[in-house]
Every structure is written in structure tokens, then in C-alpha cells.
Amino acid sequence: MSHLKYTEFEHQLLVYKEIVAPLIRSLWSLEAAHANASDVLVFWLASAATLKALFDKRETIGLSDEMADEVTGIYNKRYEEFFLKNDLYFVAFMLDPRKFG
Image (tube, rainbow, N blue to C red; front, side, top):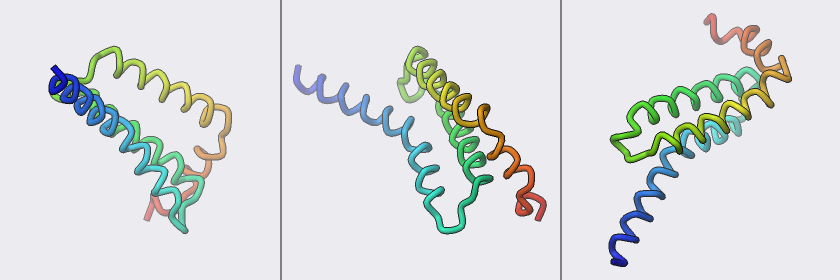
């Protein structure tokens, strides 16, 4: 019985890691010496793409629809709070000369 509980706990930790990893990688990237406001939006969108790919294969990793919906809701709420109330990041992205280089 304890083996089953351990296996379930281990699985939950692996799913948690899969969800949190893209967000952590984005935060680490933003700590780079040359990161700017444009990078904030780029890394946010990259995290969204990674999470979408993860949620598209949620049956494979054993992630419930409810959990995927909850994470998506939280992610979208933070996007609205951070990016829709402040045009700085979008403007910086549009003016970033690196994207045309």
C-alpha cells in the first residue's frame, strides 16, 4: 500500500516539474546580463508555447483536464495583469532590432 502512495506522489511531482520547468527557465533567462523588456514578452510567450505542447500531450503524462485548465487559467490571468495593463513590453518587442536582424 505504501508503495502505491509513493508511486502516486512521485508521479504528481513529475507532473508538477513539467508544468513549472518552462516558467523557471524563463526566469533564469531574464537574469542574463543582456535581457531587456522585449525579452520578457518573448520568454513569456515561449513559456506559453511550451505549456501548450505539454497540455496537448496531457494524457501521455497523466495530467488531468482539470489541472491543465486550472494552470491555463492562472497563466492567462497573470498575462492579463502583467501585459495588458502595461504596453511597455509589447512596444519594446516591436522596436527590438534583433528580431529583424
